Length: 104
Image: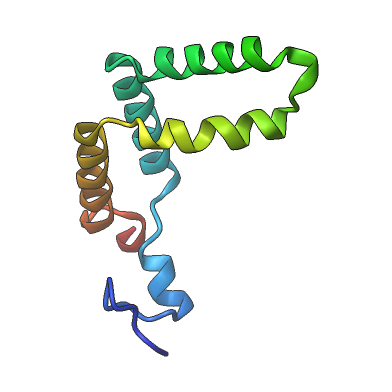
């Protein structure tokens, strides 16, 4: 199979499986991300953006899908760089850990 330029790992299902996090790691990383986003005020900022958008456009004039399409790109762009870097480091550590799902 061909190897990815980024990872050097092929698209073979066995290679892909090796890169998957186990459920415990996923939950722990998700909880950490949520905690960091709350700590830095990102969550409150996004909640306020949602309120502002609903107030401007009117609750009856916007669908959930439209609101999501408008807010999600802004929310992703507003994640602080320090949080992005920490999460990238933690994901790499979890994938490289000898205690990861591929070694159990």
